Length: 273
Length: 245
Image (cartoon, rainbow over all chains, first blue to last red; front, top):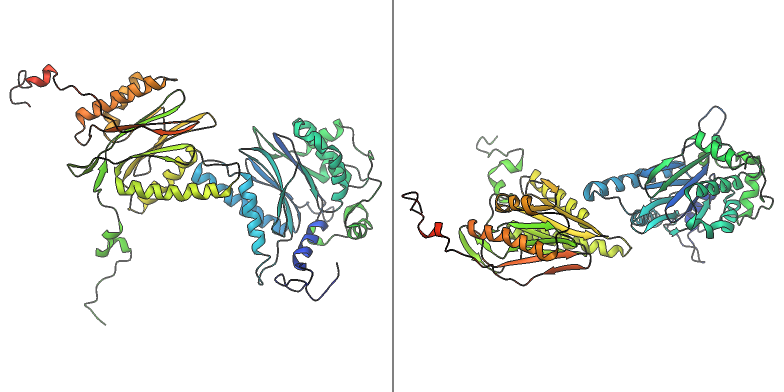
């Protein structure tokens, strides 16, 4: 991405029909630390990499429970993510109060997307710099959506966002056809494997990742550290290298810059970690 | 300073211009609605009368209406308020349909929406003067609930409004059981409606029975119940108690 005369304002089109500010906002998502999501017919698992700024600080929360049946993992400007999570929680609780029924995740996602779109069409606003992986249950089953700063949303069987997410996506692309009938535990295992792909050789420990599950008969909750560590040990994947050799990132330029700082993500902007 | 200036009350509702803003009494009213769960869904009955005080003025009032794909609403009380509620629900179902996704509002959701509506109006001292019965079936689950004009709401296997609470529900408590057949359900409802016809002076002998199942709503054509007035106790009521009628 290079500076040009059409990127000052979100309400300025380029002659090629692009809104650069919106695209720059999507860059912010790519710079954040990775978040992945995958689903079966009955369960959805969200996972993310948590890196603390320093040994002294705690890591930022990137997975939020929105309601018993909906949760979200974010990548990008976590402050924007927090604000949007609060909006989602509000919408869910208001719907529950009026109808005594859970808000269908498909409707929440559309409301979120419309909210993001507004920020792409007002000169006094800026787009939200956060990508959201929304996991939730609906009348029609388990769903995973990705909400973009552009106001677009897509439904996925499995997806990864944030830095080095391409490695996770490659892993998921190989396996996704089996996810629909996976058991809950296999799904969590696949999530942990996908997270490990984004670590580029660093040891996978429960202290640097967070995993959350929601499913039929199982409220959205974040798995505690011991459970995650046990699963990591059980699957015997600590320290194994399983094909992260290539760096097949679509946005190879940014990834290379980040990688130079090692796997701790020092190249990323401070507010993204 | 003008000492003759009228005192403006702080709360508009307390001043003289306030009363046109709130419901004080109903004008055209419908009487009881009775409903029960049966094997395939819900059966509901209501007569077609709209009383204007003690006059049985309107005799073709439909007091039960389908709501969306999954629900049936019956109302007693002020007819114009029932029509207002139908307008609210029309908007609700319209917006629900406009989402055009696989989700739809079921009877539970509509019932809770109505509860919120009634309760909020009651809190503003401007109630919708109705007692509502909401029944429906969605994904095999039968639902039957009621909401009053003050927002009291609950679900049960059989519900009734107005006089139905006093005359019909005792019958239902004795004779209702799970998995009633359609014929038995109708017979039970007719028994309740007959008692109401005998004893409720605002009841008329022209009723409809509505059924809702997974397939949809059917509201019968209006018909009347056979009544018998030749009970010997009615023939000479003063026999056992002089002066009675």
